[in-house]
Image (cartoon, rainbow, N blue to C red):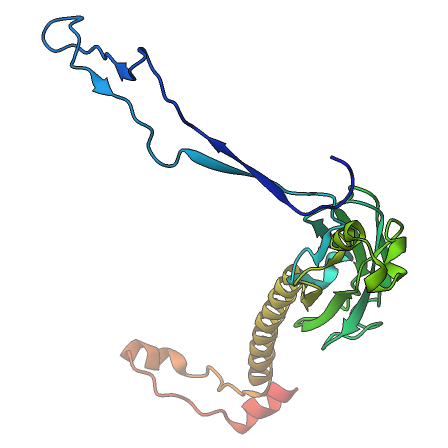
Length: 263
């Protein structure tokens, strides 16, 4: 390993001149066929495909390819600080700076989250960094908003001073070395969706259900009390004989009953 980016190389490994047991390439196998230890017939040993292997030497002296860790993220608004990963693959050589910035969607900076913008520094052989994003909690009953985080073109910090030369002035080694510059991968944008807190929503649902039940009970009780307060009952005079007959006619309240009721 020379710490210099080079083109991938390869070599071959071939199996040949198979010999086993005897110079003519034959082998005697022993198996039990009725009589213990009796030899079977001789068999010819031959090489079968594949008997040639290609060994690739991949150069890991690349500045790396940078991607966001997740393209689509769903979080709850009560998470506090969300940590978004930015990863470095296919090489980790050298010190590299990667810019990042958030962008509004249906979620708005200052209302649903705090805007974030800055630079990540990947040291030599470092393959992962974190972008902290503060999520603002509103205690929303229902919420479904989203915003984005983008990473920009990575920049190597040292080691590629010759890239300012004209293309025709570059040596062959320098041209190959430029192929090892850090670059962006296919996943440079993360979509972050903010949802309501399920526990908070469940708690609100329970409280509303309980409040509705109490309201029904309270309404029934007040209705009964009001009805009882304005209903006048007939007096009990002369009711004994009628009860003995088994069927008493319903009495209407007299004027005196109304007077006594309201008194």
